[in-house]
Image 1: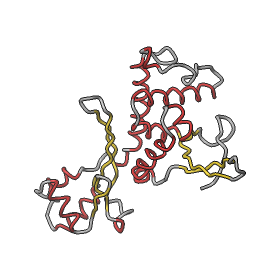
Image 2: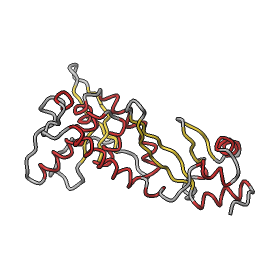
Image 3: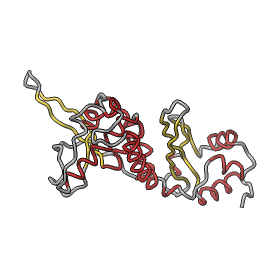
Image 4: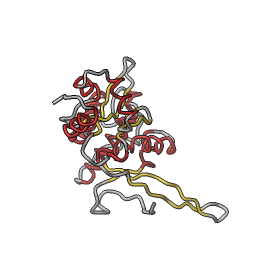
Length: 242
């Protein structure tokens, strides 16, 4: 890890970024919990984008004269809003408003500060006098665009259930067979392509967001199979599915 200072718009030619420290402050969450959420979501991001999130560190001076290093993440807008899919509606809306504030300020305009006022959920409105549903709709639109970009590579791929049908198998039997053959393995509740098969264009990762009946947001990352992957499976399983 390297150490840099947290910068604001206009201080660098790089795209605007937000740190996990600011995300924690905006959402009222503990920084360690924000860090853990980012770590948990990083593997799926790496699968899609091929890059890890930028991990940095700050140095603090201790009262005894010593030094303490604290790691933190620096995220682009798309990365930040991807992480926000794990947060509740209010936290998600606050992040969206913060990004809007940064971008409006960069254009030399003014926008009220979403951090300096009471949470909009207490009044039924946003800090900028927008109805809460409008802010959440804004958040969903931005996050939807980011997800669309992330899922572009997996747009024409097939799920395990769809592939299993071409082999006249249930998805449970299909996954079990591939696991026994060493083609895939299960970790953190999802199937992953074996390491020795990575980089061959056989699979793509897909991200899906849904809601429970209680309104709880669910984010699911799962592996899908490309046409090249189907040909590979056909050769391995020996079934004439083409």
